[in-house]
Image 1 (cartoon, rainbow, N blue to C red):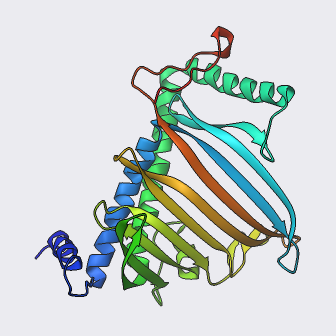
Image 2: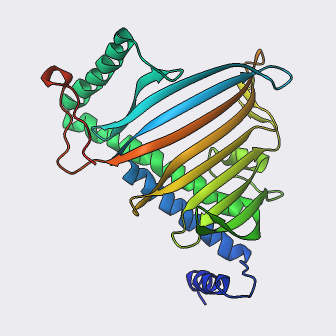
Length: 288
């Protein structure tokens, strides 16, 4: 029986009184399929605008909050490139002066892309495609770098999810250039049973991760939790991300921060939506 058929039969079992289970091979195939689907989500996300709010809390040595800052941005797609337009700081609208600077930033990018030569555009798109493919290869390598544990079925927002725990595989030798971090990270993932999409991801750093000799170190205990949601019955997009970072830069400055990111108000562009230069009346509002 093929792995895909095994997965389908497991879904049928999940609806009966028998306890469902997944083998290591089935889990790896599930991880790969979810990774491929996430790549498609990345492409479809470019058809959407949305609002993103970031809250950063700086902590002291005791883990107490020293200060809190927030930024709210509109995320726009301009000539195939996602751009953040800052609209509020600390939940207060920007001053007229700062809002004008943001408009000028967007206008500058519009002018740059509008005047881009065909050859430069092809080079830029080819570079972006290469980066996406490298990211895809990295994510797919995760399926080979871990030992997995099937922890059961859990409902999130009314939908069944496979819950899978992952521990670094002892002695694994990374292949991808960025995969050397994998032996120092464990994670748990919730994968939507029907859509084979990542609903939730909880990542924990279990050993110090270093970049360069003295450039940066990410310490044990750093944690990232990402939650996605189904939008328009066609794509899964980020709903929330929570990051707790314990890091040191250049062996001199420690960073102990918590960051919460919320994404909302996803609106899809229609095929006739156009970017209008500010000089001609401002960037058009996307049509939902």
